[in-house]
Length: 56
Image 1 (cartoon, rainbow, N blue to C red):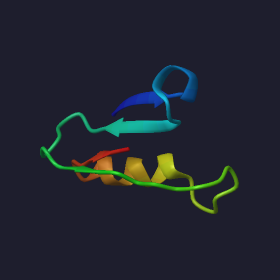
Image 2 (cartoon, one colour):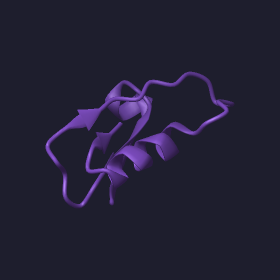
Image 3 (cartoon, rainbow, N blue to C red):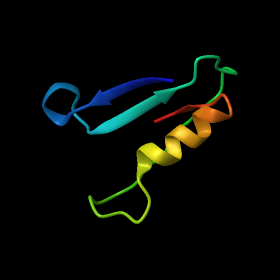
Image 4 (cartoon, rainbow, N blue to C red):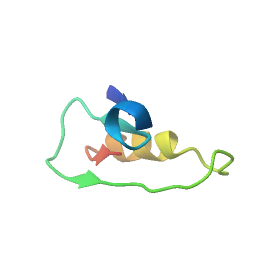
């Protein structure tokens, strides 16, 4: 899995990108708010990547 981190100063937003080794060409965008979310956005993105989707 390939990971890319984004930060506000450089990119204008904060986020994480999880890309599978073999993508099926589809992507999903996960939007979550707050630092104390019950579920980590990167963990959800990784689960989509396990199924071939790019998760951000």
